[in-house]
Length: 471
Image (cartoon, rainbow, N blue to C red; front, side, top):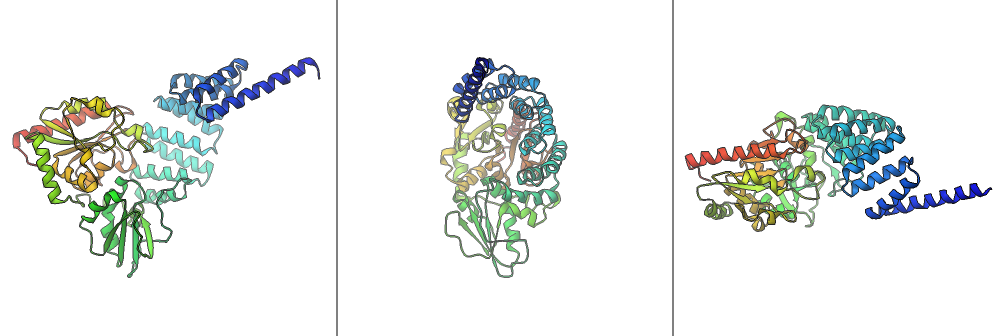
């Protein structure tokens, strides 16, 4: 080997070592170190499309979205058939709200790598973000044709179908959640009930998902109790008092998760009940009130709220859901967005926000907002407070399900790509007759939502001022 070849080998070995250091820093989340290393890499090899793409991934992780997009564009300009580059470009564009461009990039990535389920998932999610639900459904069917039987893709298809009101196929595909790599956490390994007559057997129904999901599905428990057996209903402890106070049939026993599970013959998660009862849009049971607040607690709350509100409209307010929710960034509000609402004359606002984000209360200091959240020890207490309020205004979180289940009036503030249970294009909900839905006209447009909600609150305040309507 000549001296030139040896020098080239030494340079290549050094470049590979630089790459390994950069990847290790990137994987460890040391973004600043990784960026410095990728800078060296692209400086040494400016036509290395992989290095440019990885630099873009690091920049996106650092919140430098515009620079990340430029890196990914440069990577695919160097290598037009680089599927991962088009995918990373699409992800970066979507994160910056450039959704149409993201669809184009992700579509190119899917064409180059049709068996990559993750690429299809991001493409379908972006179409959903744009409100193109029919296109999202057809694209997901193409994805399944290309990738085969992938439970995660089928579960996404289920939610799209349910959002479109295609309940027969949607509820069937919703069962794919148990086949996913990360299925719901709660499971019982007894024989699954298929809706047949219980004939004296005991059925265990259990809440496998969030609080709102459980509240929404409680309407089915009386139907299950009519199938000729005993029913044990397991809920999370925070819901125990609320559900125990519900007017459930005598053959239903309510227990808290974590308590000993009574002997039972068959079991079923609550969110499988719509499939069992063949629920369609026109056959949703109990769209009115099916839960109730404790009368003594509600009376105490009416006195407490009345002392603050007087003759003004008493409005409950919840602006954020759980920070761990997969789509929380799209559904929760920053406190500054509340300004049009809090400025409504004739209304007094009461926070029932259980998990405010850091800095929320500091930002709301001095505004006409009474904090009730610290006194809401469980869902039974929250139900009593909601019963004492004139109206709830809330983002999509468990409290709106409770409000609807109580039959109390509420305004639900929804993102453009709302959760499947709110369907599409509707201002009403077939699940909850007392709720009104206010949707973003386009992704990220909370100002329009808040203006419409504020106008509705103002109208309700005017009605109360004229009529003296009692809570």
